[in-house]
Image 1 (cartoon, rainbow, N blue to C red):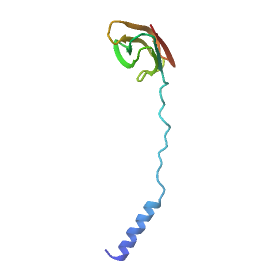
Image 2: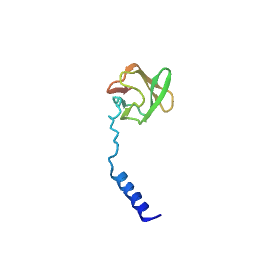
Image 3: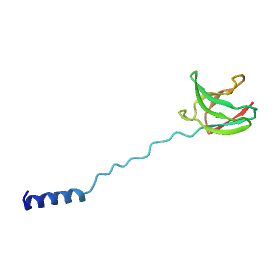
Image 4: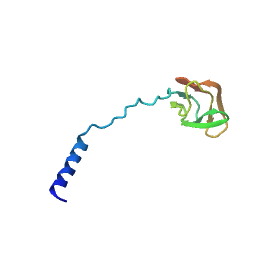
Amino acid sequence: MNSRTLLVALSLAVVTACSPRQVDVRTAPTTQAQVSVQVNNTLTQAVNVYVTSGGTDTFLKQVGAKSSATIPVQGFAAGTTVSLKAVTLDGVKTYSRDNVTLSGTYVFPLP
């Protein structure tokens, strides 16, 4: 490669490197409103908490005996009507609330 070809190649590289770049500007995707369930478990044993929609149970979280937990409900939009269910670990007792419209934080006291 002769010096003239090298000079032309370097000049093109500098021009390309220093030229303006295209910028793609977009707005952030909209986020769903956060909905959650506050479980206040006064029972002497832990419970598994589920949200039920269309006959399908979705496990949310296990809440310990005599404790409370605020559980985010992922995958369900605000305004969705669901059922909530809490089942004791031994499977003997089930507590439920039907026709719950998800909005903000829904309080689910047990029992």
